Image (cartoon, rainbow, N blue to C red; front, side, top):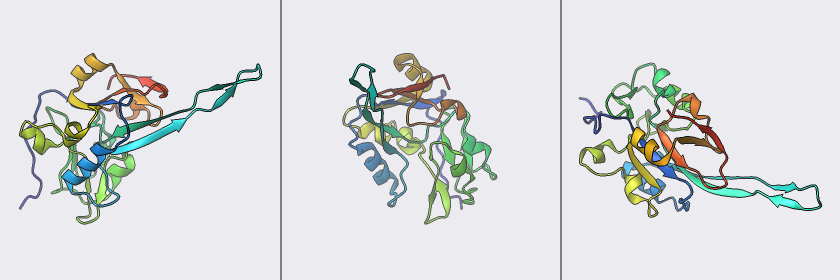
Length: 209
């Protein structure tokens, strides 16, 4: 009997996330809500809140220094990429990108837990479920979306720093930044992600996925 439950595509357009890093306080409510919703054990996190720091004190050459020290937080999960390397390297096609809304999912009826997807993903999205010996990851809360509800990370963020929707609409509204300091180059997988960077973030790529 199949253990994998699929849902009809919730959109006929590619879905993506918008992350307002300038608004994120690092409270990790999204991370905790995701762990609770998916009943994840310690160490397995589908959404992760990273702290990015950098900069320093730069001599001005006139006896003083310029301060460009920065620190900010960035909430990241699977980006349901336009060119996901996890699906390319899955030997059983368990990791797949479904048509319509473009959500990347793991078919547990096919997954053998080889880990190739995890080794391939630059964002660390696929993670081993030690209880089943199979891979797992963010599935964009397809079960909630099928009921007309928001992904739990979106609904939980107290500052409204996470939004979702058709990626073309998000880019039209918020721009096309999808790679900042602390993230891999977007050209690797073309993530369906838009970021409003914190003022300390160094924009590395401004590219459509």
